[in-house]
Length: 575
Image (cartoon, rainbow, N blue to C red; front, side, top):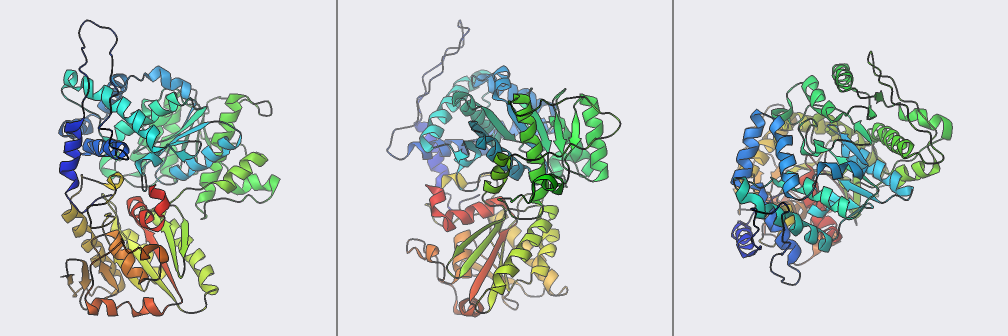
């Protein structure tokens, strides 16, 4: 997520310059003495100083050059990760004691992890949970017992790890780990220091060469639904992607996958055989209910049923390996000719409660503020967007049946990276939106934006250009190929097609939300959240919104967009 203002950049650099660390002598001593001296102790600023320093790892020239080198030889990624881990004072051997559940997939891996963590926490275990990306604050990525670690704890452990890496960088060609790699090391450090009973670790991208795959001895591994995504890194076929995902398999460690396309399943079977990993296919969710009746899920959508089945197998197997009194230990014989189906079992009351109590913000989430209801889902692939559409149409129609008058439907969309935006937008057409609104992942166009949501890797100009391209794709799908109208810049605030005004582009999330809600959301009515006035011609287009009994807003296409919206819609998430 980004910030329109460039005022943060010199501030971030100033923070780095203001930090002082004690010199560390590498010669003549087998043990490194690391300082943990933090940034200046300005009340309330220690956490923001840490975040601003963390953000420099997004653009660190040495780190980016290292990433480029590793792209041509992916095996270097894990080699580099081991080096950074050792410099940070964490050993791979220590990670063996974290009792890890390792989960990858294209879509649903975060939800699967959330289900799994909630179930095992219900048994009284102290859980760690590492996921990405964050929605509002970086701390969300590192959770203890389901809650993001506090600002004080984050700050304390951040400077410990950053200090150790910073003090040893001169002996390693000035290299520092890139953003995600650093956060992975930090998560491992936090979980070790906080002595969790288990850690649920979500893979970042892929599996085989992802920095989380430094793990040697997880207790169980899982693969959620596979699809085409991150093709520049993982490959452009389902077979290539499945090979990458199967890279998290470990010899003798039980692994589970949801049902996959046949081509992907063949690759996973071969990977499991090659690695000597006992792989099973999760049963249908209905198979569990056959013995215990209906099971409620805290996360909405039919697609969550396969994620829940995977979570049940992961948590059940972890408990088996823990050898609780009421569980049987798992046999780990390896099947080589095909992938056998895992045995459905009767979920315990704790498991059923865990599935029902699971919350995972930004995924099939609803927020109601007066006459405005927001439907938030960070779907960002074609398959996940189809699941989002199915969910939105079902729940929105339920709400509309109970409405006292006409309901306006609004789409707020953005997508990043090499996503197939045109394909995703085409799937959204049958939802019959009255307006489609596009904006970059910029929370607001003022200098007070949260450093947690800054992204220095993409320019504002690039983000706005992408929004304009998406708006044109939307008009193409909705106007039978007639795209003669040209988006115009209005008051430096909104870009509006002059002839066809059912699609608009705004420069930030807050401006888009203000226009969509037309003052009807009491949470957005905060006088401090000011935006520039629009032209009367643009305001007039919103008559439908003012006269509607309810406004339904689907926010989708990017988890970063959803996170930026939540910053405004759920202010408590920023505290």
